[in-house]
Length: 284
Ligand SMILES: [Ca+2]
Ligand SMILES: [Ca+2]
Ligand SMILES: [Ca+2]
Ligand SMILES: [Ca+2]
Image (tube, rainbow, N blue to C red; front, side):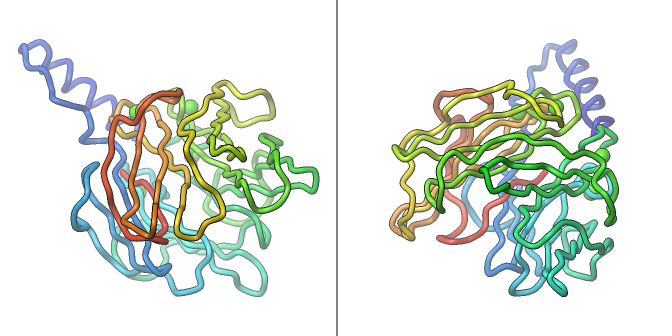
């Protein structure tokens, strides 16, 4: 991934020397993806509504967690699912955006953990992590450098679920907020008044958030027909991840409200993609 980024910078520099200004560096950026009914993957290659540009079946009905990460470091994010097998989370990862068997299969984490994935050590390969909610509302992150089970390589506390109960929700998120090639952690906390507060840290250890802002303040919790959830991606392809909100109202096609900068402000990219209750993801 980093090699591709360097090549892109060299190309842009060469174009600039010729007096050509590239329209946007979004070619290498993140794009929308949805998972329908837990096993139908619809990937789109631009920040716009329309039909899927890549479609395949992967996983089974009943698989609980769905990821798109770069498991082999070739620059393309591909699917992973978690399947509960004998009460243990089995990770089933595939290296291409197509149906077929898993290329990697291992058990990692516990039931009720939240599955995440990221490049924790900056080698270009994204690997698993789990986020475990403690009784006191603190999140403990257990991150792994390899695609196999075993002890976590990094374990630390970051983030706090501020309100008891299911609503307002709090979501662990992962991204490369500062563009240094390392993914790190964050929590998006919903507030009763509809604010979504992003608290992001640039390191994979305990500490204060490096970034703390509200992105989107008109969310509604608890109504099945009105869904709001955060999403992360490098929408403009500059190497840094930014925030987004998926907004569904009245069961209509969800609206994607994506922002390039990890800060408060308005959306830079707005479109509708997917259907009500589809799982929403980003990929590149
Ligand atoms: Ca890959
Ligand atoms: Ca890595
Ligand atoms: Ca980073
Ligand atoms: Ca970006």
